[in-house]
Amino acid sequence: MEGFTHYLRLESAGAEAYYGRGAAYFQLKKWSWAADDFKKAKELNPEDRESWTGLALSLAMLNKIYEAIEIFETLLANHPDYVRGRIQLGQLYYRLGIISKGHVQMDLALNARPSLEERRLIEQLQKEQKALDKKRYYRPDFEALRKKNQLSDSWMKRIICYFKQKFR
Image 1 (tube, rainbow, N blue to C red):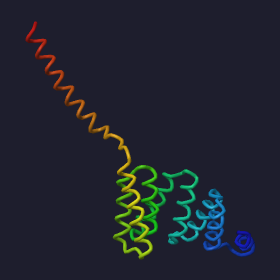
Image 2: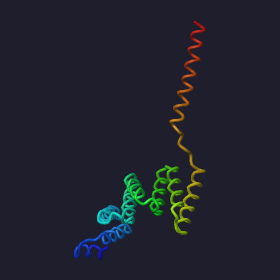
Image 3: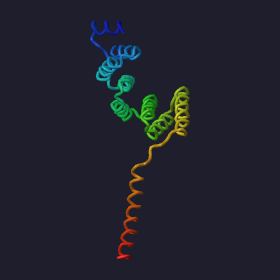
Image 4: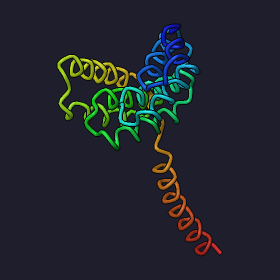
């Protein structure tokens, strides 16, 4: 980290130096500083997918999950076959409890020709998530319940009106 900082003071700063220092800060769990350096590296070299990933992961560690998701979605719009980005985005969705979107990202990662190591990771993550899904209590579909209640309310109103008219 000190070497990168020293280099950034002496030379004209390149994206690689900011990326390197950001990675060092990330390892030291200084998420805010890491995010700043990854952001600068991303600005200097917008095509470097690792800077985007580093920024998104740093933001996720700062509990800025939706900002991290937005960065991953922008990155994947430009690089749809970026397997590591798909895996990380899928994991964020899993952690948020948006399981279906997580599954979609993992399936897209499998279709993007992952390496053997990445394929094993994806399959392991899917297996773990499916085991959790079996134990999970699902939140009810409130929209479906609302429609069902409206339908039953309309039938109930009809029945009440019928009996009111009949027994007047």
